[in-house]
Length: 441
Image (cartoon, rainbow, N blue to C red; front, side, top):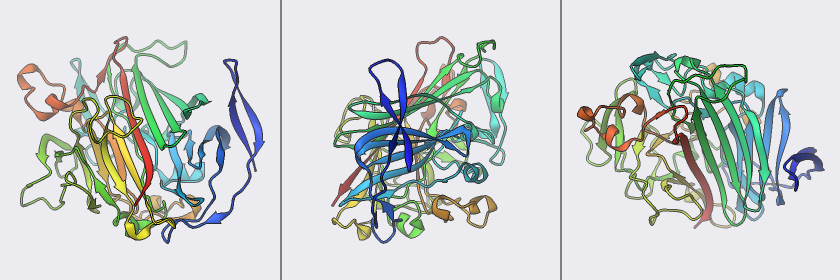
């Protein structure tokens, strides 16, 4: 099979070259994982191929250590993250589709960027600069993940694809005009996937948003401020994307900086309150104390956990992440499903955001026709078959954190950064998250 590999030139332009890609031998990671070809090693590259049609693309990033990431231009979606596990084996740890048609029919945000505002906005409304904005609702009375035609459904354009000594980088962009899904203001979004080279197997995601720029040259830009809160909606299972709920619910989770979570009502919209993960009320049905150490994934998890202040480096910082980032979550495969080398896979998630949504896939319903759309390898995903670890600002912070000085005693106003960005302002939106992988005893 032939691939188009990007090779950086000494000139400023870059050229796609056609090189042969050899197929490897099959193997099995462990009893849950799907067999895969041995990962290609030694060559770091980024390649492009048409995805369904010429207007959509599928990009493949390889770090030369055996880690491979595939990204669809539709929704800027992660469709594959293959991690080496030793002895020539590897495992694909994200759910996804392997065709444009399936991705369009499924509509489940597998691996996509969600926005303009991630999570729920109560009642689909917000106020900014004395104007009230009414958003398209798609989750009962609420607006969820940018609305029914959010960024997950938009085709992102290529900005750059580069290979350096330290990383393999893919940068894609989308322009969201004033009024899209009801939001005020123009928003130019770029998304960078950076696959590390060297000793670390890590995928860094850089979400950036700029107000008041972008669009066609003939279009008059909007001077309105806007709101933004982006995240990636990947569904993870470290035993393999198709390994199902038995494997996922045997995973262990640790949230080392989350002593509180944001409280929601019956519609799952934030109330504007926080509560401690320890010593909850008698009506609490989910034990949310993942602060103290490793604990099995609860199938009912669908909560935004508050992250302690991101101030400098601490004992939980992993090597190689940016200043201002902290480790917000750790997930590890069950010890009963160790690799042939006697180790298991662990994922460390670091971020510069104040929240992390943990969702154990309880809403996956194989009886729903949309969930019956075949995923990779013809798989039908099951309830609790994978988990989302979404770094983000707190949900609905735009309705709770933007308070006057007389009202700013609430937790949102104290701890959340502003969701508002303004055209021409020196500070725009930048969210960085790193998902690092290692084999442990």
